[in-house]
Amino acid sequence: MKLSWIDLRTVGSAKQAILQEALHARVDGIVADRPDDLAGLPPTVQKILFPQGGALPEDFGAADIVVVDPAKHGEPAELAARHPQIEFGRFVEITDAATLEDACRSGRTEKWSVLLFRDPTKIPLEIVIAAAAAAEGSLITVAADAEEAAIIFGVLELGSDGVMMAPSRVGDATALKAAARTTVPDLDLVELEITATAHVGMGERACVDTATYFRQDEGILVGSHSKGMILCVSETHPLPYMPTRPFRVNAGAIHSYTLAADERTSYLSELKAGSKVTAVDIHGRTRLVTVGRVKIETRPLLSVDAVAPDGRTANLILQDDWHVRVLGPGGTVLNSTELKPGDKVLGYLPVQDRHVGYPINEFCLEK
Figure 1 (cartoon, rainbow, N blue to C red):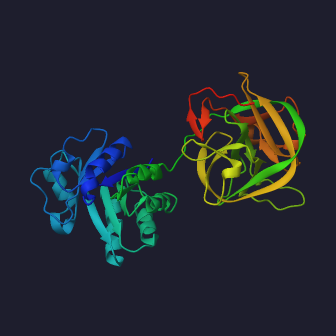
Figure 2 (tube, rainbow, N blue to C red; figure 1 turned 45 degrees about the horizontal axis):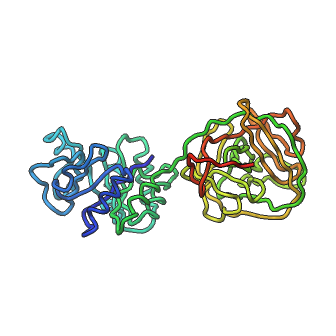
Figure 3 (tube, rainbow, N blue to C red; figure 1 turned 90 degrees about the horizontal axis):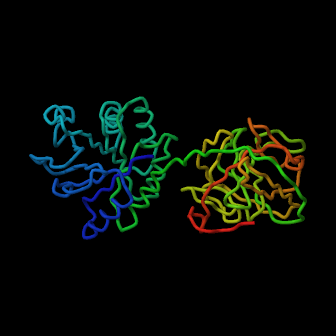
């Protein structure tokens, strides 16, 4: 989880509403320019004092971190020596090569570096992230909105350690917290035993083409029911008559569920360019990947039923063709048309039902 800091210094009359939303969303830090604005905040949130253009107060109040501009306030190390109970950070505004070097130096040496990049390109941030990659401090980058925050969190794959953002309206704090969730929980996969397969006629199936290379032991989970999914492998393994397409999963019929972001499910028919899906490997390790295209075409379909050792079941309807594959234990690649009762495949069996994709505890019968 990346850090999300909400900057209250310029939010105006909506300050209290935005503060309450930020606390409810469990953001990591609240930034203010006066100690009084940090008083009374719960211990679950970091309290960051950032006077920027103003003088440092004599009393830092409840502040956990004080961000300073060395040109105005002095060096963080000197201030930390005088106030050992407070953590200090350095503010750097990057406008040219000299200030970029200052930012790199800060990233390597300071516990906290708050960075404001004036140019829209993210190349300077890439340079700072690379320069500070081995350092123990944290880089906090100023973002204009949650959309830019999502980009900042992904720069150079590592991303900035955190984002500081001044909300313009209620809802922005929640959006920032969502953007900070750059990972998805790993999953406990189970071995399922095939119990039956059947040719079920024609229908529409979806190929999910992503903007990512899949690994050979990786794919996406697909199932007819929200409580039972089977791991469909990507087209990373050689096939006769056609080249590999390591960005693609020939996933299943359009009604099928797959795992998206925030532990939600999506129907394959809902996916489009820019959607997020969860890639899963045979060990249950996960990552979010971006959909580049979904190809929906009419094809013969095959229904596959499977059961877990505890009796729970899964069904997958996918294209009835030899080159469409699923993954078995140890990463065994299994051609769907050759599956037979007794074969083992890998699957995932969520315990909660779904309402508009969200997990919920309610009665729901799927068959």
